Length: 430
Ligand code: UD1
Image (cartoon, rainbow, N blue to C red; front, top):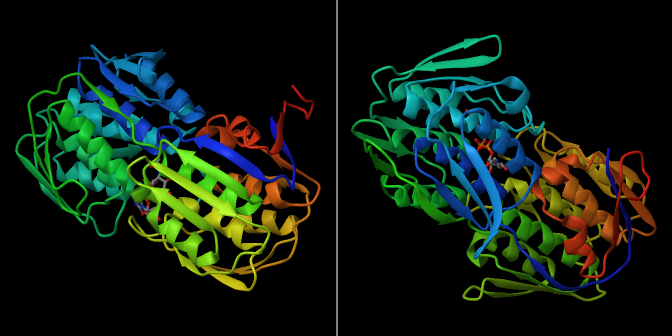
């Protein structure tokens, strides 16, 4: 298994190009199943997760062609006919979001058999809201031996669905199914994350009728068929935020380019409060992060649905707080059990105590390199951030988690001066 070794202490100077959003790309890929015409996605990130989903879509009858197009990396997905409508365990377990093929398969073919999902181990992460939404649209759902069997032989029918709490995945899933349902669907208490707006825009380009974009109430008027389209994936706000934290932790002067400033406003506010110099140019889609030798100030944070502070940036921000002056309280409200990075950061000398859904971080003057283990996708990046500032060498094990969501990480950080390298397999350098 590959590892990443970082020799801490180097300043970061330069610019980091932000890739297309992983969490958008994979839902957009699932949307390609809704039509028998080609869907062209540009600004596509090349990640382990998009590769997993590509394999699953191929198994369902899609051709998935990646290339470097005139607008950068693109993927053209084309499913003239759905073969089988079965998504097996060995492909779905690798990535939770592949469960989102259930809705499009059901909407297009009237039936689907999809394995219950796997993915990051952050809490229980049930899919009850996804299934309830599909049932509200008229699907008959049964669970047998780890599989969801869904049927709607006479097609899905529009309905009013009010989510009891905000779920990104369930909102997207309901949207993916409702676009081909007969009549009108109203989604209330829908998630407003930018990835949902991106999915809605792509579906609209494919011929769907959706109103209320970027609000908690989405109204979808079903259409009989969708067509092919071309759509650019939005920039990855979590990658943007993670590199902003990395630059602030290492110190230096880094420009994050090809991004969207409003997507990370909650993070930028917290960073400014902590003493990081943040200069954002919303028009140019650039953020400049600067930090001198002085220590940052501890600030508290609470994760919340968008536009609140994203749970996916909780671990990176906590890493930043490990060397701040004072005590910061980090409260996680979206996922239970999302502090698995805390004991690993402690191995590097951080002073963190977790109790229930809250972590208390007492800033220390200096972290020290050590061997640590990546536990989930976003937590892994927090260990890289800590390693950038730690004295000596930090080795992050199990980095397949990082490869799921961060494209060319060593190159992006290395180009800014970080001393970082990938160790192949048993620890030998490539
Ligand atoms: C998505 C993102 C993930 C991000 C999260 C919250 C993708 C691929 N992943 O995950 O990176 O951290 O949004 O912004 O887009 N829940 C239920 N029942 C359900 C569905 C969710 O109880 O049927 C719970 C979850 O366990 C969690 C909360 O709802 O506690 C929010 O989860 P949700 O917004 O659905 O997250 P994901 O879509 O899984």
